[in-house]
Length: 280
Image (tube, rainbow, N blue to C red; front, side, top):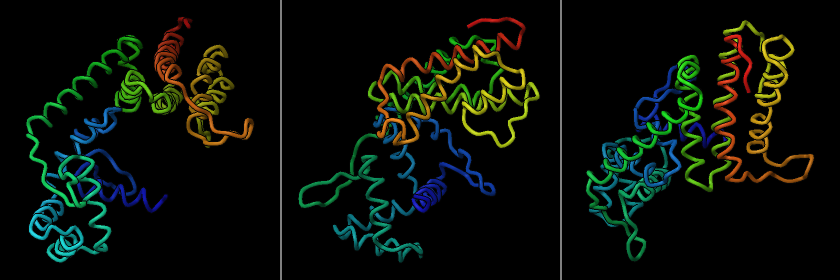
């Protein structure tokens, strides 16, 4: 799994989607945010636009059209670009990207042909995705309240909640909605701890951070336990087999829909508490 992750990050860097600084990877393209969509056609459109300007793919497709043989095309691509990886790795990677994104279509006899789909159609899909994300961000900010929304970090709190909302509204994605909501609250607790001077040293996870904040007098118990609904839900979604029940938990669509709004109201309540008001 570690090698797969490293390889995926290296490929994303080659594609220009992320940039590496030390051991940290950061988005290098505004298209990255559209990869968080629950809509597969939007993710495919992002990759299609990206690989159309990716030199190894351009050469591979050119050689594939010339030879009608994916292995031969990979061999020639490797030679032309002096690539270090194995021919089969080149073939598998480029074919996977191309067939998922629709840049290549599988035809009879397991051969491949260029997709002549209009680029304007792809751009329309990307524009639709951007519009949906903007609408989701607006809804999240509306639920949190404008003052509280300005108080929290946009990239690490608002955007993941908007992504969670898009997954929840798409259906069959309760787990993704829970995970993105949990990530947003995890980040929110870190920033809140910094603001109020709490010490979360060596504390991981939403529940542990909530406990520390409550113990240090920065969070009332009522809000601590409201937050723990989010923490325990994320644990159920993310931790595989639960020793208490001997199985992994399924996450319903209803939980995915509900948790986004629990998360927004939790943030709003913490903001109100910070302003000297008490509201749940």
